Image (cartoon, rainbow, N blue to C red; front, side):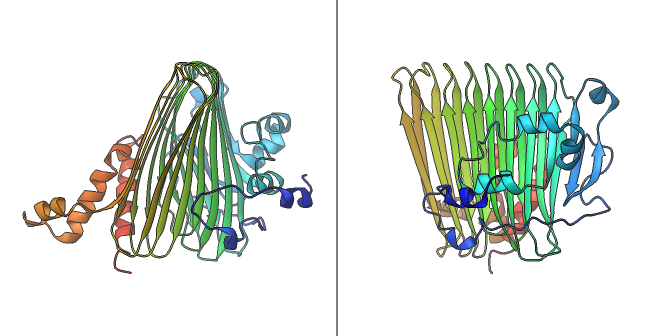
Amino acid sequence: MVDNSVIQSLPLPTFAKVRYNSWQIDEMIPATDKATTSFFMKNKKNGIEVSGLSTTYQHLTEKMTAQGVMLMSMVQAKTEHPDLVKKMIGSVIDKATDRLSAQNFAQFNTGIFVYIPENVQFDEVLHLTLNHLATSGKDLVARIFVYIGSNAKVDILQEMHTIGTQKTKASVIIEVIADSGAQVTYANIDSFGEQTTAFINREAEVRNHATVDWQNAEFNDGNVIIRLASQLNGEGSTSHTNVIGLTTKKQTQGLVTTILNRGRHSLGHIFQRGVILNRSTLVFNGIGKIIKGAKGSDAQQESRVLMLSRRARGDANPLLLIDENDVTAGHAASVGRVDENQMYYLMSRGISEQVARKLVIRGFMGEVLAKMPTKEAQQQVVEEIERKLKHEDD
């Protein structure tokens, strides 16, 4: 256990142009709520649903189990594989990185643990669902850890939800290790409720010739800060990081998306699309860093924010830090309003303004939407867009 005075002495993580000090997300009381029924998982999909401290769904095919795949709640993993959990947790995101990460390390009491041995090939999507039971007024402090062995391949769809309406906070850290030659698509749909203020920290370590592609969809309703990072540590390692976000009402979502090129001939691309409604705020901070010695590497980023309200605030802040000459790098960023010519064209063909806006937004987010790992996930994103648009006049 880390001493609380040590935790409080660490700095808060930096989210440029996002003021979150008043959110008090460095003061957490971990919830101990339990559930008895599944909320979202069904039909014998490969996956797990953890609701509070309870596992409300868990299924893995006999084939995957026979190959040594482990899929369980963090509570179960701590009991059955304590040495492995101790070795893995904190190996990607150091507990002393910042105050919020240290606090999570010291307090987490729920989450999901996944271990996929080398050469295992998943034919179906692996579903990971984490539910915050906001029924007692206490907070979600959770950890998700995913290890993918050498030359293994898996597509993951991870979801996070709020169940209940109590005003609470959430701290969730997700660590991913892709060992040599592993191929991973990690898609997530975050939809914490309006009364949940959250810190979400995702980071992957990508080893030699491995790939981690993020498909990150942020449809939270409350105030949230999100960190998404890839460490390209191996030669020929790759990460395409795709992000979409939509904010409504008076909420703030602040994102820092980072790719660190350490390995030679590593490739890291960041692609972000955001839509802002009402009086909300959405901030994209993109950081691409190529360190000395990462010859032949490529770092690119593009962030676009579409404003659907004159009262909203959006920022797209690209940053490239290049310490090596033999590389390629570039960035693009923009914040703007809906193209009136597009709207006029659609409405002139009998489409209502509301439907026209919906079509423009879908098109704007279409590149990331199309890369969601299942048709069901794509439809879920479409439904989240439509749900958010209902608040356009709030």
